[in-house]
Amino acid sequence: MLTAAIVAILVTMVLALIRAFLGPTEYDRMLAANAFGTKTVLLIALAGHALSWHSFLDVALLYAMVNFIGTIAVMRFFEYGNTRDNEGSGSTP
Image (cartoon, rainbow, N blue to C red):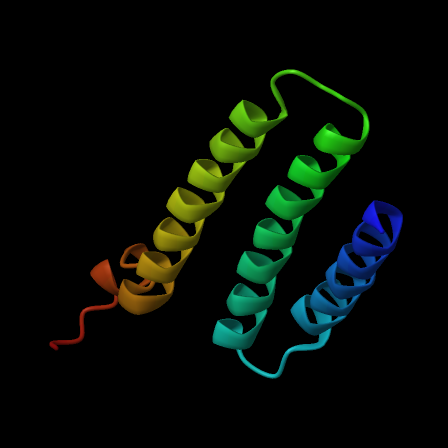
């Protein structure tokens, strides 16, 4: 049963990667990347349990925090854009 869960998570990770590369908008790509990170946390937890690692939950929680902070940072970048391009253009807002 554990092996079937790991295979199912791997299949959904591949589907998320396909959406991340082919997504029509930046937001679709970012959502797919976030889903991939969430599935990675699940995979670490399941594989750690299957292999009897002692610190698998610590690694999974750390990866979840990094995934969350990275998602917030990229979404802020999409929201505000790169302001360096507009500073020297001479146009008024």
